[in-house]
Length: 361
Image (cartoon, rainbow, N blue to C red; front, side, top):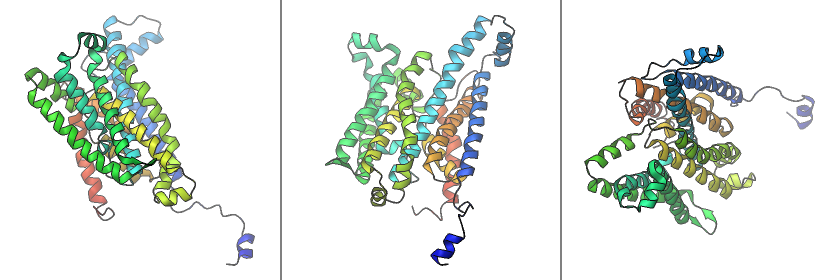
């Protein structure tokens, strides 16, 4: 068709065959509804007999709520629910950022050593906390382990960034290799600390490593969320850059994307979100790698929707896993890391089975 004939044909209003924006927006609405339902279930379900609906009905009638119900609902379930939302969203968004940055669907927040560094900090606090000066122990108190985990994640990120950055440019390949080395080193140091731990410390280490939301309090939540929120807010602004990086760094640069800035912000966001999540809940696996995979299958790889949907699905998934963990063997609780592994492992294998003709592993 000549240029004149093409111009005479007028604008084309049909949607491109590969455009799944409408589907992605529908998925966003569906995930928002799913998260709202998960929040209500998380507040309503628990080992205690407190009923959310009876409490809400009493408040609507202007009646006083029994003290026991008020404590269970507002001091136990509410902060636990909010922590689950923050941790799930942080892990899922971190996974989406890592996969976009590395252009590898198998990338995970733990691949850069942030999780291993945070774990080393927590293990060091549990095993060697008694050797710290009394002033530090008294000042931090219950927050000694979360603070140590967060600092461990940040230190590993700073070391990683220092190794992978040269002349103002960060090499993604070097960052991957350095992350593997840092993870191995942190694992070795953690093994030494576990070896010298006593029986009580080994029990604490076991339960912390499996992950749990059981220790949620308002103070703990308000300590971690201010670190997670800036990372979660910054992530959607990286969507255009990550979409460009799928074509390669050279192509992204020619599209006008500041590649180094995208790398810097993505690395800092992953470090903050993953470090805070591990500090709050311990080791929880599969959320960061499975959630972005599922969303790519559902609505495509566009990061404009993938990052937001990852936050919604990650939060909802972790709340559902937490509900299972506190009800399946009630009144005892199953570590949430076990639940996510049981749910996430088969799903991930199914994803790999479906994509074995696409992925060249």
